[in-house]
Length: 443
Ligand code: SF4
Image (tube, rainbow, N blue to C red):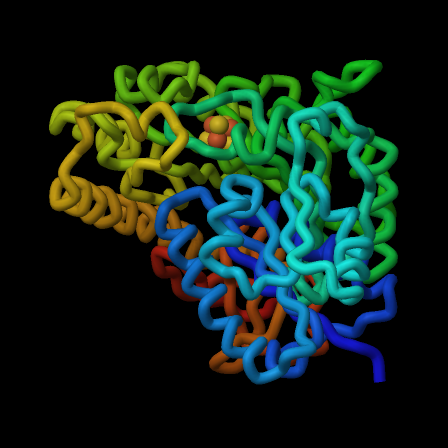
């Protein structure tokens, strides 16, 4: 019986994709996947460090994993991801029982590290070095058992790192500067995913809108969408995350024109007050953001537009918060990922002296969530009676099936597992803020 691995993924879709690459490498080494960590010979925790809470969760999980090691001394326990990239020494101090650690730029070295750990050189570690910044990015195999969407959806990294340096964000320090994946490698990976049954592909990066500026010849995301659009078997293409400053009219027009490109744009605004945006180093004003949002809706009137908003950023006055509320009300987003600002050690904003009190942040978050829930319910209610094409991803926990519209809204309806991977015509019969309920129509 082959040895087995179990990967625990924390954080964003980039981490999900990194975990797929780790799983791909392990599968290539002959390991099989274990659903339960108790059955695994190798466990890897792929960590996140975007917020303090994420870090606490990672350390908490490491503590839990120690008990597996105590029960099975032969077990190899590794930790990867942004937390390691950020603070390798502290990770090793707090979890000296680890066998191997590696950062986000050295996933390709996992087989080697594992062999060294097996040979008893412990702990083995390898993290990204600044001199690695210009190294060509290795293309890694993907093993999709780790991905969501029941194997229907696949994720492909198209650009690593970020050059933006928003004052609240640790990502550029952890993931380094932007490095685009050559288009031929992206297309090859999408083809491989299509061959494995993936129907919807999401092109990933911290700032996908700046894709290709570092390649020679220079490329852009619109051109990449055209290439991915040619891949047989792929029905839907999405991309995330975009940056309002870098989203071009050419990109918006391309999404509107290409039948497989889904009319859902996730465009993080972070705030609707110009002074807060300036202090965040977001490099656009609320009015400029509105222009881009208007351009999206002019090209694609039925597109969904979603965003991220941080409340309680240092220096956010009641007036500034009100401007953000009015901005959210005006733009009428389909969904908003809301978060209270939490200082991230190592970022400029953590050192700002005008931090907002926690109770004020909580009150503002609740006010924003209340308002957005109402707006989302109103937008979704207007869909009742409409026909939507739903790509079925999985069976629902309470029966029936679950899938998404082209605009990325979750729909549940009656049906069996045989529908997974199929795009079904569905009439929306009921709508809440988050989920729509539908009824299958005959095609
Ligand atoms: S653009 Fe996104 S990833 Fe880059 S620094 Fe800003 S918040 Fe972080």
